[in-house]
Image 1: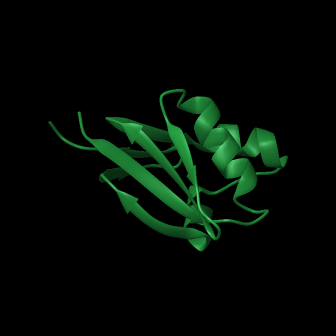
Image 2: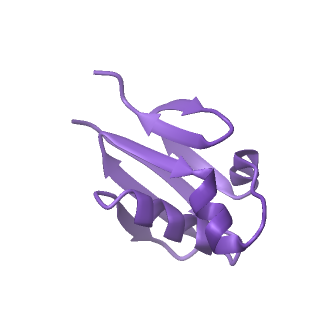
Length: 89
């Protein structure tokens, strides 16, 4: 399997997003840098809108991820409820 990842700026807005991603993807691991957090996962990483909403207490549009997004690695499949990174085998 290949590793996929997503990296965000380190700030208060991204903290609940990162917590949600790690909770929903137990195989993922966090790489914290001074100004960036990077979440790596073997095979696939799925971000669920609903999980983020539970943590922030309001409606969340997955397009909001892009405000603090630095980079991604993997093929992106996105809809209103999920943001999925994976490599096609």
